[in-house]
Amino acid sequence: MRTSPLHDRFGVEVHDVDLSAVTADNGYPVIRDTFETHSLLLFRNQTLDDSSHLAFGRLFGPIEIREKEPEKHDAEMSLVSNRLDVETLATEEESRRVMQMRANQLWHTDSTFLPWPALANILMARVLSSTGGETEFVSTRAAWADMPEDLKARVRGKVLKHSYSHSRKQISEVAASEEFVAKWPDTAWNAIWPNPVNGAEALYIASHAFGVEGMPNEDGQALIDELTDFCTQPHYVYTHSYTVGDVLIWDERATMHRGRPWPYREERSLASICITAQECDGMALVRPAA
Figure 1 (tube, rainbow, N blue to C red):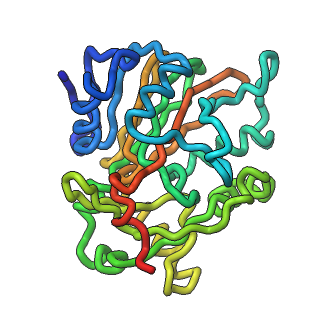
Figure 2 (cartoon, rainbow, N blue to C red):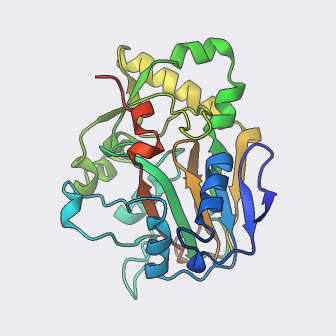
């Protein structure tokens, strides 16, 4: 596979690959190796429909289903969109749909609030607005490698507490009280998630993180804010401006991302699936000791 860099510290564009033709034996092993090394992959000019998108995702692992009993439900495509139905867009800043999308404009890692977090997100651009709507990424692996030793010492060995409602409260109480948000209890994960393939350490942090076990809440939040500010300095940021057919795949264990606003009177729809991390993806390395 031919690749070219997206950022000098992480991320590559992969050229001349049709993702709908990738199979477990043909193409996927090289893609997976590139994913483990570079954390963010871009494939342009793709034509995945829902079926082929889900089939490609299953090569990485089980498709995330945000239900308390996922074994009773079928995996479906998630559409990150301000479209409510065929005729209607959510256009107001305070509409319920837009509030959730505004929450996605906080620096975050997907699904840290679930009992099994995400390994990856596989996202395809379907409908784009005339301006805005970019996604920004940072490598928490690169930032951790650069972090001053005194700051590293304050977080190494720590366990961070995560809550879906916490990130939504930063937008509004209404966003935090939605049933699909409030139903998830708090989770806790080690602050560092080493990659099980190459051993590279990454800070595992998100807008959902609200505290540090063993620290007063105010002090824990202050440390989380300090770590987030360090990781999201401008020189760590890659900003992706979409074209229709772009597919982005990112490692949730080693990155943070955030969406950027767009004129909500225009549709922006991205097809997205998360892949649930499995034991082979290093769950034992991020799961706190009993």
